[in-house]
Length: 292
Image 1 (cartoon, helix red, strand yellow):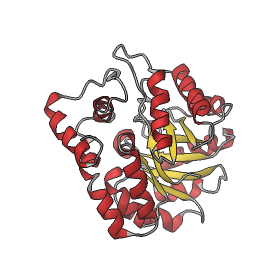
Image 2: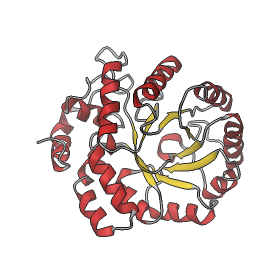
Image 3: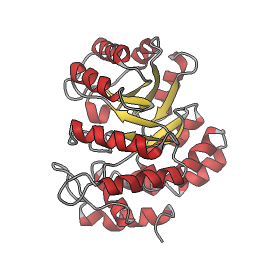
Image 4: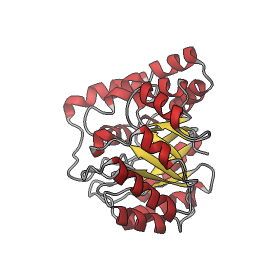
C-alpha cells in the first residue's frame, strides 16, 4: 500500500490564513488524476506546526470523503510529547485513514531509548499502520537504524520515511529491518538513487507541483531502470533544489499559487517567498514541464 510517489501535501490557505477547503478538494483531485500513490495530510509541508487539531481533523475527514479510497490517506500524528501523540493517534484512528505518519519528537532531543519507547507506545495505541518519520534537520534528533530495527518487532509499524539524504543510510536500514518493512525516501533530491538502492517510494514535496512527473520517475526507478530514471529526474532536478530556496513550504506554496491551484496564504512565522527567488523557481517549474 505504501509505495510509489506519495505527496506531503500543502494545506491551502486564503490570504487571511483560513484553510481553503475549496482549494483542498481541487488539490486532492489534482493528485488522484495525476498518478500520486498516496496523500500525507498534516505533515511538515502541510504546516503541521501551525494548523490546529480541529483543522487537522477536518482536513483529514474531507480528504477521506473526497478520495473515497482511490489512493491511501496518511495523517500526520507526531508531536513533541508522547502523551499528546497518543491522544492524536486515538482520535485519528476513528477516521477512515490508511496509516499514520509519526515524526520524531522535535526540540526535546530524546535518546534512542526514549525514541523506542515513544514509538512503542504509539504502535500500541494505534489501530492502523504506523509510518516512522526521521528528519534530523527539522527535529534535531536522528532515529538510528538499530532503533528502527528494534521497532520493526511491532506489527503496526510498517514503514519509515527517511529524511537523511543519500544511499548509505538506506543501505544500513535495509540490512537490519525485518523482511517486508518499507523504506520511503524523505528527500526528493536523492530519491532516485535511494529507490535504485531498494527503497519502495518517496514522500515528496516536488510531487505537490509535478505529480505526474514524480510518479513516472519513481515507477521507473523502482523497476531498476537507472537510465530511464535519470532522464526523467534530470528534468525535476531544479525543482528538487529550488523548492527549498527558503523553508518548506514557502516555495512550494508560491509555486502552486503561480500554477493557479491555490491562493498564497501561509501562516506566521513563515512568510511569502522573497521576490529574489521568483525567477529561479519559475524557471524550475518550466524545466519540469509544469509551466509553459
